[in-house]
Image (tube, rainbow over all chains, first blue to last red; front, top):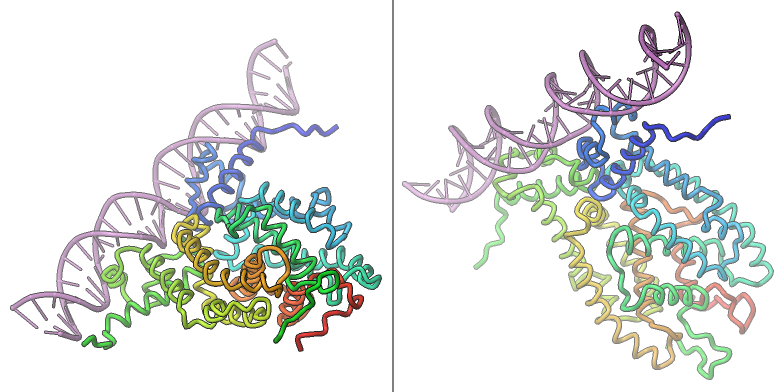
Length: 217
Length: 217
DNA sequence: CATAACAAACCGAACGTTCGTTTTGTAATT
DNA sequence: AATTACAAAACGAACGTTCGGTTTGTTATG
């Protein structure tokens, strides 16, 4: 039987990838040297080249690992996607996305490194296929529910994509960029406001309130 | 009697900044060399160092120029801010932000370069002060209108910030990152869907089921 | 059990280039 | 004449990568 024994070389490879992730995500690709990676990984430069053809395949490998995470069907976010209960799942979506960003904030930064230094060469194709998969999985369920009148007019898929992208960007800026968005309120509160707007909009709903809509004077 | 005469040296400085902007925004800071800048600007390396203390001040200068653009009261976007007619101004906001991003897509990329390679060192303070200024300008007007019942409950400023950030991100990804978001629809249509959701939410409004989005012609 | 044989893992010096910056000297402008 | 603008060469340091040699671990053989 095949044992999953941890080879010594695996430890080195892991150390190199971890060091490279740390450095690429905090300095960029071009500004990170192989010697820096070697030192941080407590490994010789020659050893790195024994395991990796060159600097770029290290970067590529790191991006591949992020895709594995994001595409994992066991990921909570993906399970929410396949249930497709928008907009009831907005809170769950926010929580799951926060979890992804918190757990993989540095890997997410690599995407921006790729955009800046490689013109998005490594990630473009992936993003396109991912968007398609998402639309297929989530979209069918949604359009059915819309026919039943559970959702307002317009393409419901847009609403989900909009929210998902916004959540991702929100937490990425907060966590990966390290820039608190500070809408003048707590994080959780800001998410709550966003969800409220997504569901009900910012214009007052006329029915149960004495105030009826008096816009466009 | 200040002459606005264009000195010859100004032409060199301008060429250097233009070349540096092009290179920094497409390769990142660390991966761009002074020799590359010099060649693209048709200027000698020594000449660059005659006008700029070092490489980093070139980068800093470029970011400063972007702030000047964004803070200019004459900028259409800023004029919309000071009128604060949310959510009626959503279309105008989208258009103005698209204009800013289209006109300054490369400078916007510098922000991401700063985040990646300098941990946002150059931009952090600016963003904080800008958010405050925005909240002060736009916020007062909004809270008054909310008291008059023109807006739904919750902090109305969140809605504006939410929309503004989303528009910026949307156009930045489209134009600066060069990644078409392709929500399965036209750009203008996607913006329209977003605005509709912002105003009315995705849940159907009680008055007439499902078809309440007919106003705002 | 001991050991020879072999490959994978690893190291660190060295290669040729290129880096950011400085120095030196000349042309242009004032 | 004095100062600014510019170009070219040169500096030491650092770059990505290569390479010869050593250590380590496993397998085969006695």
